[in-house]
Amino acid sequence: MDTFLPSLRRSLKGLLILVPVLIGLVVSSPADAARWDAETLTVPVNPDGGLVTFSEQEINTGRKVFNTSCGTCHAGGITKTNHNVGLDPETLALATPPRDNVDALVDYMKDPTSYDGEYSISELHPSMRDAELYPAMRDLTDEDLRLMAGFILVAPKVQGNQWGGGKIYF
Image (cartoon, rainbow, N blue to C red; front, side, top):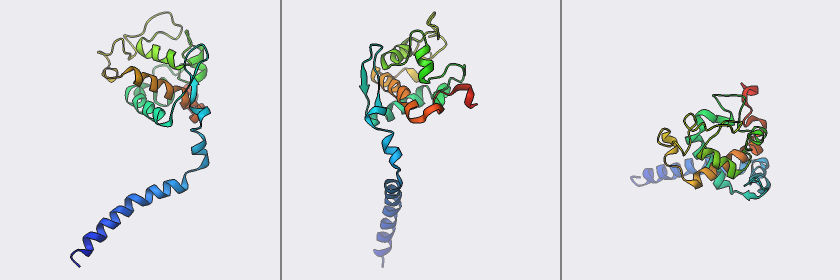
């Protein structure tokens, strides 16, 4: 009896961990699997039309880095300081220069400019250029920036109009 109760407790703890995992596997919808297909994970890498396909793991990593570094002001792809300029595909494409590909977004994160491209806003917007002013940017690598850019470009494919919807969702 003395060994039975501890064994029973261990077994019950194991079930408490295993049951939610099994439920998650059974209840997952086919739509969840479909949203991570190769087409969804493929985005423009440069303005010349080159494409890159990210893995689901890379997008999840990019999401985590984005939420930690940029999510305070850009939660859900909106821009809290200017609701007219979000991170949705149309807005990114209309920027000067267009920011609708991985290379252009990485360039922006390194040295941001105004939406019309006329002047630097690195003193106002967190960037690698002024990383000392913005602690969230200090430890980011080029790979972190690439993964964040991938997440920004894949998010509207998964979330639809909810990503970067700006003031229409407020």
